[in-house]
Image (tube, rainbow, N blue to C red; front, side):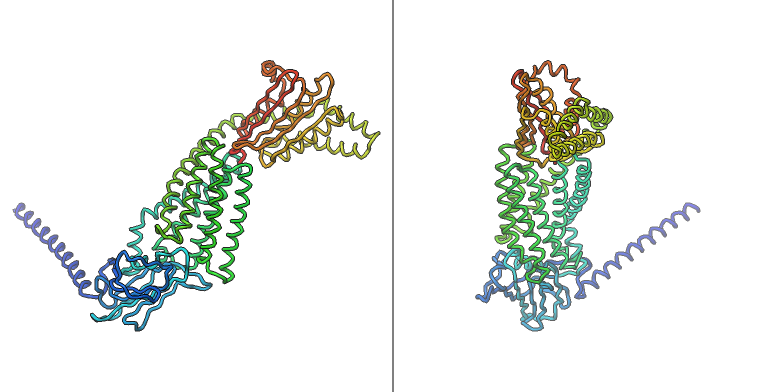
Length: 601
C-alpha cells in the first residue's frame, strides 16, 4: 500500500513539474509572438542597416551608391536618396553616428530632421542621433543631406556614418558597443591604473633622488593622458556620456598634452647641444599648445579646427626630435640606445598619425594606439625593473647609512684642521695691516667656508654643482691669500646643471694644493678644475702639476686620507658615481669624478 502511495506521489510531482515547464515555455512564446507582431524592435536587438540608393557630392551628378564608393568628407556636401535595407516598419528608432558633421534626413524632402554637431562656442563633436521613422509607402524615398565644416581629421566621416546606421534603442546600442569594445575598454582601464602607479612611483623616486625619476614621471603622465584620449576616442562615448563639449575638449587636450609629454620625455634622453635644441623646440610647442587652447575660449575658432595648425607644429617638432634621437644613438650606452629607439618609433608613428588626419589611410588612430600599447608594456617592464634595482640600492644604502653618518662627521672635521685655520687667520691678520677691505672680504670667505664644511653633517641629499663650485672657489681664495701668485687656479666650467653629494670636489682640490703643489721644492704650481658633459655622464676633473705619487703606495696609504675615502663612498652610494685617481711622480695628479646622467635625473 505504501509503495503504491509513493508511486502516485512521484507521478503527481512529475506532472506538476511538467505543467510548470510547459507554462513557462508558453509564456515565452506569447511574448515572442507579441513582439514580432508589433513595430517595436525585439528585446535587446540592434540591427545594422544599409542605405541603398544614389548619391551626389557637392552638387554633382547622381551616381549609384556602392559599398566601396569613395566618399571624402573633404570634397564638399553629400546628398543621398534611397531606402534602408532591410525595410523597416513605422515608428522604429534609427540611429546615425555623426563624426563632426551635420545631417538632415527626411522622406521625399518633407519635414526634414536636421542635426548639427556645432555647439556654442563653435565646438563640434561625435555622437549618435536618433530619427523616428515615419510612415512610408513603397514609392517614398529617404533623403539624407550631409555637411562637413572641417578640412582636417574626419575625411571618412561620410563613410563612417553609412557604416554605422542601426535600428535600435539607446540602451541596446550601448550594450552592443560595450560588448564589441570590451577588450579595448579593459586595456584603457589597465592603462589608467598602471599610469597612476607609475606616477606615484616616480614621485617617490623624486623625493628620494633616485635615478630616472624625471623620465618615469613624464612617461607616467603621458600614459595617463593616452588612457584618457583612448577612452574618449570610441563610438560609444556619447552613449555613456552625452556631454559633447566636454568630450571634444578633453579628447583634444589629452592628445595635445600626451604629445607634449612625449616631447619632454625625449629631451631627457638627449645631451649637450642636442638637448638645448630640443628644449627650444619644446618651448615653442608648449607656447603653441597654450595658444590653441585659448583660441576656442575666445570664440575665434573651435578647438577641433585648430587641429590642422597644431598638427603642423607638432609634426615639425617631432621630426626635429626624431633626427636628434638618431644622432644621439651613435654616442649612447646600450640602455640609452633602447630608450632612444622607443622614442624614435613613437615620434615616427606620431608624425604618421598627424599626416593621416588629412589622408585617412587608417581609422581612429589605430596605428599609434597599437604601437603605444606595445611600447607601454615595455615601459611597464622597464619601470618594474627600476623599482627592483632601486629597492636593492635602498637596502644597500640602509646598511651603509650608519657608516655614512660617521664618515660625514669625519669629513667635516677633516675640512677644519687646525693648520688650515691657523694659516687662514694668519693671512687675514697680515691683510689687516695692508688692505682692510680685502681683509673684511677674507673674513667673510672664511666664515662661509666653515659654515659649508659643518653643514655637510646634516646633508643627506644631493646639492647642485653650482653650490659645490662656490665652496671650492671660497677655499681656493683663502689658499691664494697664503700662497699669492705661487698658486695658479684655472677653471674650465662647461656645465653646471647637475647634482652631486656635498663636499665631493673640495677635498680633491685641497689634496691637489696640500699634497701636490705645497710639496714641490719651488712651492708653486697650477690647479685646474674642468667640468664637461659627456653623452652618458658628467665629468669633474681636478688636476695639478705637483709632485705626484706612486699609485701602489697611494692605494696602500689611502686610509689616512679620510676625505678622499669618504668622497668615493658617498659618490657611489648617493648617485652611483665613480672617483678615479691617476698620478705620476714628478708630473702631478688627476682626480676624475663621473656622475651618470640617469643618476642625476
